[in-house]
Image 1 (cartoon, rainbow, N blue to C red):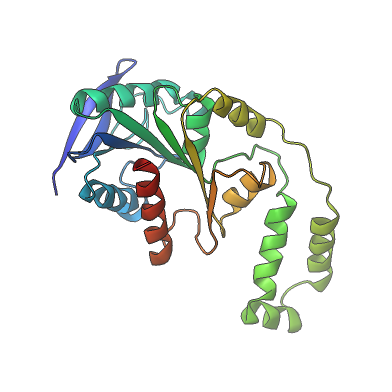
Image 2 (cartoon, rainbow, N blue to C red):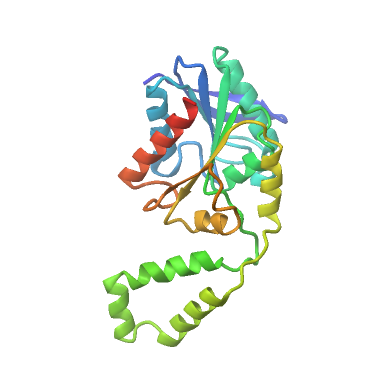
Length: 257
């Protein structure tokens, strides 16, 4: 493995980064979601980067300001545009042979890439974009998926039959889920949609079928969008072996055009 660590400047703060080398001319910049460090949960992003680099594509990961090994204030994803821009510039400096860079983000990192309008990238891979805001109710799709999975779980049925779960409460939840009128997209969902309209390059949405964030996004997006790909049995970070393989295939396919 040809991997090295370095730092770069963002608004006077030093940000930590890791580069997995590859000879290809198309690179991948991983943007971490939430307060996740660049290695990812259980080193998942590091392993993912190694797989992509093994196919010849250089991969850069970084900690935004205030996260992990990076300096500066942590102002969360809505203020991460300067961090992403600085990382993109550093990637080009570190890998001058690269002519195309694809941005990849999961959860609010995907939303951050959309809010920037994909500025400077040649392609975007947007996984389970975050659309929820404080005070939002769970979308009906999320509630229905919750009950569908519970009704398919023998242990959950047993708890219901033995009185360990409130039947009345469950019925109220089901009734609410199926009666709830769909709401028109608003707030963050509209902002990221508008941001993506400014991006002239190709984009792909990756949705984990067992992820509430992904389901919430789908409730606010055009389900007929041909850019959407879904892995039905995947959870939020694609930790299942089959989901990991699916994710790698999707990313490589997109990068190869």
